[in-house]
Image 1 (cartoon, rainbow, N blue to C red):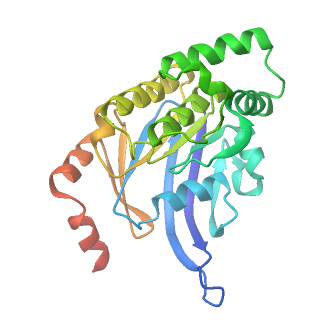
Image 2 (cartoon, rainbow, N blue to C red; image 1 turned 90 degrees about the vertical axis):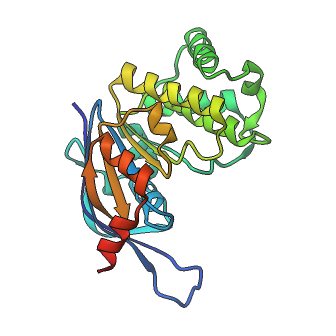
Image 3 (cartoon, helix red, strand yellow; image 1 turned 90 degrees about the horizontal axis):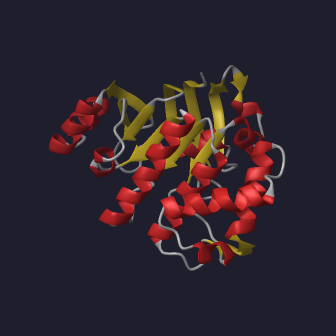
Length: 256
């Protein structure tokens, strides 16, 4: 059983104005994610959802001012970015970057080697990668293309979920993986995420604005994120309320 535990996390981000003070984004986040659990975080724009994902992953732009993040009792904040990945934390980014000159196939095998601690045997790896690409309806020819270069939004998101399936992390954080997807791509990506949670019993933190992805990925817990912290938690019924009524009840309560 793996446990990612976040306690009283406060995070600042540097202002675009070099003379200005850092901006205080996260203001005491408490959250626990265990193996096999699916958590959805929903909240209005600018509430700090993506900041939480980047802070956990170790983005250098974000400064932890107080609080703790532990994975099975180990201090995540004391780890480098690559150490966090090897420990079993995975982040699917909202805006995947392009890496010209690095083929998808080389990138994926290098990433798997780093995470697993040894290079997968080539014959087994080719079969594993081909099956994973087929599951996500990815043309095998994409393996020869540079990472994300010239990919559509949907193709980039499928590539993120392809990494998820091949790297098999303990805890997966998906930052608005549903944004920019059409109906077919949303279904395929969601099926890939569900395969990961079923096969690996992985813990999932799904950050989203919309409930449409929750029709495919059924959350065990839904958290409402407003003004840099979790203001309410519940089951799937909480997402239904947000679909009907929006965030007004929660933003009004925080504003008081």
